[in-house]
Image (cartoon, rainbow, N blue to C red; front, side, top):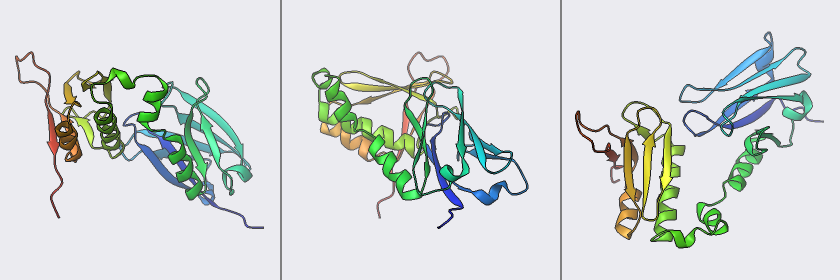
Length: 221
């Protein structure tokens, strides 16, 4: 019998929206009863504790309902070769996974249903001026958010996305700055593909215009 002492925790951060991975060792609880996990952006993700190292409680920040959920698991389940799903108690949507690294990565890939497939299931294809460009622009924005490269000049990573037939509007939850990404032509898509980072800029003092986005391009090799 092989006793596993290392497991991987994957949770989506409620502050920046990124999927964050953490290796959690059973030995981390030697001499203490509580272990805290934080996102790379600094936000708290989960607190793990145990009284006897046989039964563990997990208190996780939920990105779906914006509250905290308490989960209980035996040690044999968390540190094993099986995959454990963490679900929002309100919506029953998967918000995280615990288990062997490869199984966690596979679960996340399976969870990420394509935006195009979701739009087709909802009958939204005819809503967009250019569906293929719109899907590609949304996928690019999603990737930038995952990489922590979508933000506002005020320092916030809390960006709301509103989708229209020909454009996507990004709005900062903290300061209300906005930026428009057009998604009508191949040129619009190429502009987004060349974007390595997008930061919403505030409007000039006294201006009634929305903030502009600053795009940074990666240097050519």
